[in-house]
Image 1 (tube, rainbow, N blue to C red):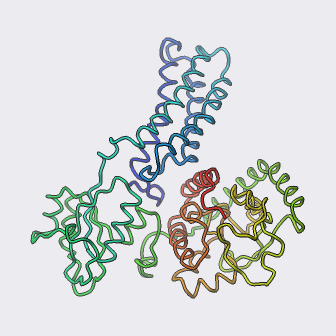
Image 2: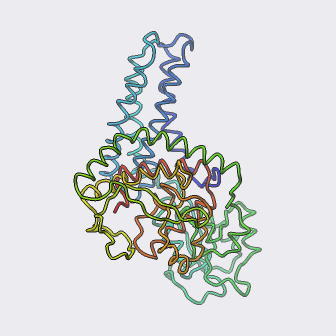
Image 3: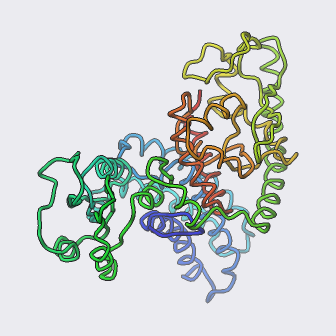
Length: 460
């Protein structure tokens, strides 16, 4: 994993991005500097066009989810995503290179080559996503512990990282509850550093259920680290591997004395400028869609077009969030707040469509311009649920230390919440965002939001 502006990205993801972008740029450079070029003269415009196209392909790949791990995706699903990418990418390639001046040597050939490059990018993305070659790149992980915590680490690794290979478990000296299979337990009297060297371990995750009474072999773990083996605590493992802060494996001291949770004035100013510019651009682009949506809502059912509801915002201050109305006007006629559920019968036909496409959220861009919300941040919740969740979920109030967002890390990483347990799981992603937020992470979330909208994941 590589840490960029406090956010972890897998090395393989960065390699995939560089291969995709480099393929298009290299192809155009080869044509410009080859027999079509004039000793490198006039390369600036073709290179600029190649960079613009490469950036577009990056956005398309991100939006279609091609940079996500493919171990839970079928070949048919990958082909469908590649087809969608090609349908968008080929016309873009033709248009971008078609805008080059006619005097550029071989412009027509560059157009065809660029289109071929786009097709090649999506073709090799499908191939490498399902090729056996990717299974050769493994991270060998030793888990120190054999209780429920160790079992949880193993389960999350298996589900989230197809390249993680668990070499075994080492039972802690004070562990009484063994939750993993006996054949997975490594039995050895040798020091941990020797065991890690013999097994060619790349990483050790310390996942002890009981840490009191000298159960942590600090000296041996230090020897492992000095020998080049990465050593992670269980909370650091979840933060790095799953981009979440697990509430059941973190304590207040780690949040207070650890890195992150920086709310400096410069970051605040940059985020505010970013919010205003993006909100104005998005409102301008989405205005036709919003007008059609307003007409459709009015034609289908009686009631207002917009739905206003009090939510809890920055520092616990209430504000009115604005959304397109997607439910019947009497959705909560009894006055009792309730969670939205899958196939909720209170949702209208138009409402079901605009929820699936997240169009109902567009009016919240007005809240962003007012300064009540940010483009990216923890989603605002209703006061009734905030009071309930603050009492039941540790650290829930931390999410109010920054402005709520139209979209957020929890929204792109977890399905729609409809219970206290769902709120707890989503809070783990919100805590990660509050701890590590940056403009880079905001851009990552926006790209993933596009993917969520295109695939209608998590809608209610």
